[in-house]
Image (cartoon, rainbow, N blue to C red; front, side):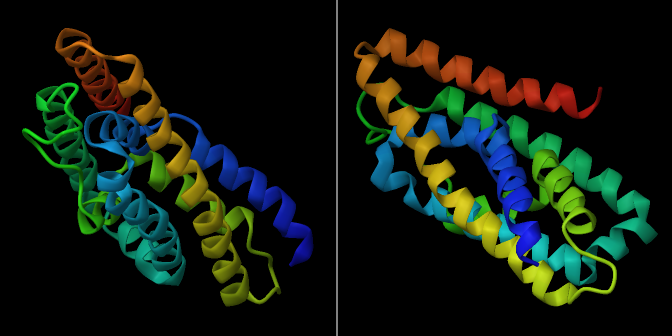
Length: 197
């Protein structure tokens, strides 16, 4: 199992540090609400995604394979939710740290979002067959996959949120903050378009 650790860690880093819906939303949350108020969002992703990987590995993936309509329904639900989140980002307040309106995602919202996040699905479904071995201890390998993703996701999520906090410090006028929110909302909406390519 130790020979899986380095490639699994690199795979997890690639999955968590590259731009996607989670990271764009964390940047927007850090920019609009600051680091402290975004912590439930960070923890929801950091715990929710590894939990999803383990749940899929324990059999939920088989349910989706047997009922492909459920996968299609999740795709449309995910698209609708991403558009809703894009709208929330676009409506976020400007340079006041999010005090006057809106709120960041809660822990449960962020954890639940993993189930409709297309990038999360792609990495979860790819990781399980890639990093489990024939004849190996499947459950120990699955636990390793979940643990590595949890350990890598947290610093990645913190980095993206802090990137948003840094952007907020550079954006000092309400007009610039509004433009930033609209750009981040547009990036989330664009990810919906990429869902249906």
